[in-house]
Image (cartoon, rainbow, N blue to C red):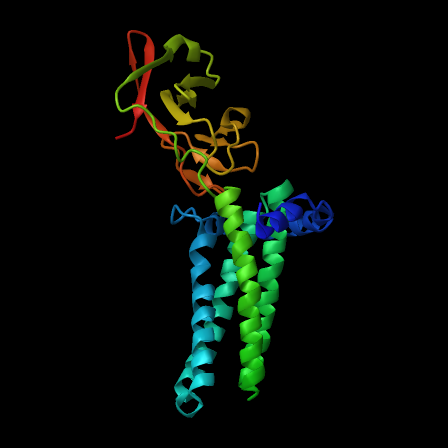
Length: 289
């Protein structure tokens, strides 16, 4: 284990952070509670987690501002244009950081344990970076360019720490990664269960190879969805089914039974949905083409 991995591992085990996280989580849930806010920040309109997309804007703006600041230092006589562009990029990054942070807060509010702790420090680092860039912009506008440059470079350094932790959350902990990414159903019809097993209307969980399927009736039609919630892997069969939707018991994501489309975050990826038919009293399924 290298030094960075060891440091992150210590963060994951630092239980003191739980005391800070709980009140922050309650406040976050209050802020993102309305359906329209929850869905927008989760990325349901685009079908892709919103936070990951938005981070490119402030990171890109502030990185380019740093390059222009360095150019201004190396070429003081011709650096006026670089200075103005750098100031504009710092301001643009500050504006873009607001929705980026909101989307990140939404994603973090449904994490727990080690992931929650790392996410809290990730957010803290990015907040410090945001403060440094705000101070940098104020110094630039007050004519204190050396201080503005120094604050901007300090902000970029802290941002790199936050970015590293963000990468760990995504690539090592799987935050906002679809938990059905490698669930590939059969292209040909396969036998699943007897139709009369659904006579009582209760949902059934049936294994299709290594994939657990939630099978039930929706408005008289047999439907089948992957039973593993795309958001965090929750068992959908333990949730509630009403109004043509199933609600995950873990974080409240809702999916349409008819096609698996998410209708309430935090999930943004749809549930894999299967075609169904009945032959000789047996329910058969295949992946939708």
